[in-house]
Length: 145
Image 1 (cartoon, rainbow, N blue to C red):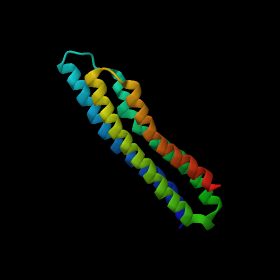
Image 2: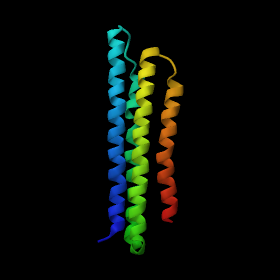
Image 3: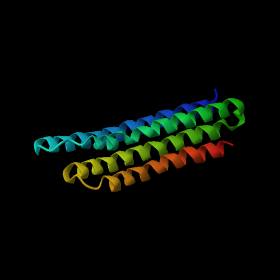
Image 4: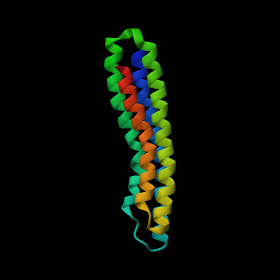
């Protein structure tokens, strides 16, 4: 059994689970903010969708790293434990990034929906959460050699 291939699959799966959780958290807040707008007879801003969908990108990062790890695991079976470790650690980093992003997006959606102000600041924090996943992906790819 090639544990490196298992690591490659796990990075994608774990990152996708984090994305799903983050989207669920942010999505609930987006729907709640839209509801408040409708109750107050205000237009429901579609920009709030950016907060709900932001955690999806971690799934793409997991996929990109999975493809790199798959190639590495098939060509260098001596490092299969290393690749398994990369898969788990990087997948968890991406998952927690997506969850944090969902939480930040939820707060941003609530604040934007209520005040109609501050979108740029709120989305900037969502972007900072995203950076953790980008670092996990890129640094893992560099470490694969």
